[in-house]
Image 1 (cartoon, one colour):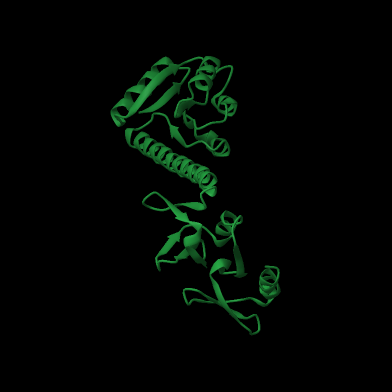
Image 2 (cartoon, one colour):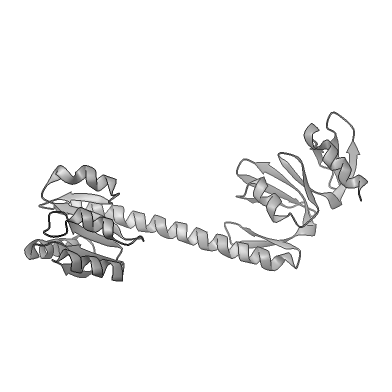
Length: 252
């Protein structure tokens, strides 16, 4: 249920808007109708509703000033006014919408649709952030077991580091090649994968490749050279990283 607060110094105008909201949507709950701006501001900052329908022309504290005083959070503002002279200022305040009185049902429904889309998008971002946080925690937990946690469309996949032969970059995606021959595609850049595998024996001999040094089978000389992995794959070594690669094995 979406919670809203209506702020309008004219009692009849506030009640009329409440009636129209109830007719326009069944999943919006009206937490309160306030006619005194300061009282409304206190209620908004305390209750933190999803949306505030805010009249602009009010004595003492006008709607524009009230909107600027709302504590930062996820409360959206939809201005309601009989004057269209405030539209530019409303945009500057980043209001979700701007409705001219008398408010028509179609205009109100469009504003509510925008509100619901905004809330859905916000929830998606919140879910993605929560999943990313969970993956990070699982990565920390699994480090002691030599596993990495990867988020996929199906959930979280735990991959033993010793099973990873190499990783190849494809823009913002990376493909993991495992000893079993299986391939795993994840929406992470190669740089992120490199950071995840920093505690282990991995190296980037080329900007597009990350290899497990435990599975290097052969090195062929050349401009930069070519690495032959135990699964038969051939990885080009860039000239800039050739010395670093050879030094790793000379120090072993």
